[in-house]
Length: 76
Image (cartoon, rainbow, N blue to C red; front, side, top):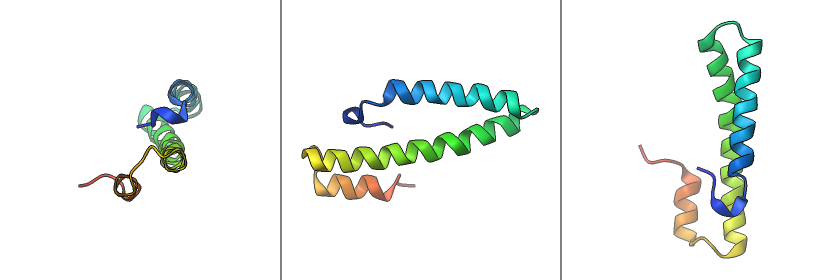
């Protein structure tokens, strides 16, 4: 999830849609196109998530415990 202080939600949604359109044009099989799209967008999403955590820390919006938990990733 994109943190609100990154102000990137609409941009991310648009980029996701464009990347999906491109993947569907370039890969002849739906499963392959979706896998290519997911790999690309997941990497971008994770980078944006890390950026949001750092930005939140610099703005004083995150507690150190919440930041460490978010940086560790989802709990299985």
